[in-house]
Length: 240
Image (tube, one colour):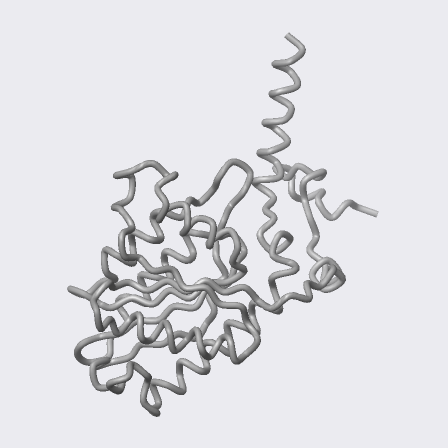
């Protein structure tokens, strides 16, 4: 019988994989609650992105997740200090701990805030062999002072892809956010609130579905081949 790779002359057969359902399903299942990190993009005293993030955190906890929220106050600008700065270290440790994330930013001048972007920029794409965000789930949300917009969530989706995260299909954009929270900072009943419930429910489901198979989901032919080439180079170098 002809090999399935016979018509693929540029493929290295030893690194080629035929994905199977078994390798996604027949894996040890974690018993601990989904670990979700929440980031928000404002340090104002009455920050609507923080209030929305806190509301999301309450929902996630009610759905059985373990939730940690990072306070961006005091986080230096990217590359202005070394990574051992206490706030940078805290953020990176939380990123490693998490299995999924929620990113919630205000929209300012048609884009996410610098505070939001700085947090993401401080999370490295890779640390040696460790990729702190790869294969983890992500939900994106935004608040606006005016009419509903999707500029910030669209940008957050691009960043999520760049960080090799599994960004869920649903998202939340809260228009005229100053009208959607009471004096105590709790979100009022509305279609906006129900969308947040939907998004958090979807995030928990996707995290439970993918976390145990995340390593296989993001295992790539090009990286397997590259790693083999690098290993071969090291062996040759050691033999000199």
